[in-house]
Length: 269
Image 1 (tube, rainbow, N blue to C red):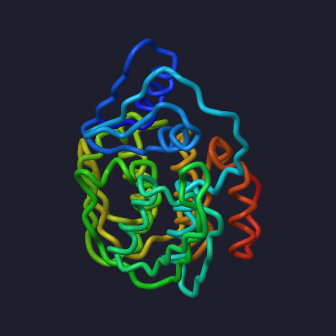
Image 2: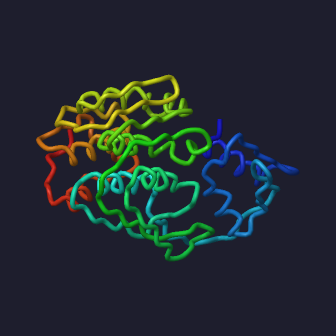
Image 3: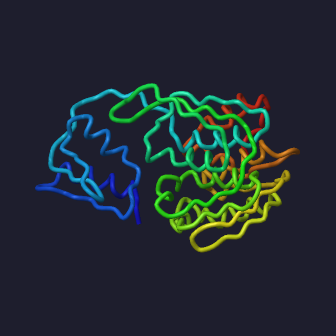
């Protein structure tokens, strides 16, 4: 299974190991670590199917960390599905192994423009501009999955508001995230009145007209944020219980969501 976390841990260990370490993966995963190390002069290089590293150390550095694409994905989906939205997400990391969700949204018919503005430690950085418009279902599968695995909760919300059927396949890794995200997404979209079917490795989502509901985070920050985006795009009052877990990756999400929508949200529950 392609895993950027496992790969990065092994690459970092390889910097202190005798000899040469090669890490091979069945599909290309996110490559922040090797991009940064290479830009800092560390002995890291790409090889067919993976990365090679020898003992050494990067030089000292300072970095202004760009916006996280996985966090940006929730606002991109919100802008795509809420009528009248016109949003620019500034200073986001545009690493091509992290922006697979943009390709999926565009395939669904979303109007997303990527504007590169520079580079930091080997990473392209720039803005994402998203304008609301009608979406249609799509298929997300195979080699595309490693590039969107963390954004699937957000993309599932896009699928809930899209016309037609969206299929997510080859994503069994979702079963062993902070929670079983396949099961959690099935439960919460069902609460919203969306027809959804879970499989061992993915979901079938039939888009429609989601309704207000009482939702749960399942103790998972991305499920909590997906619920908040779905609730924001749905008429009526919804509640996301276990909301505080969103702070795991985005402590200011509630404040930023309120600033964008102009709607004050009741305290976390």
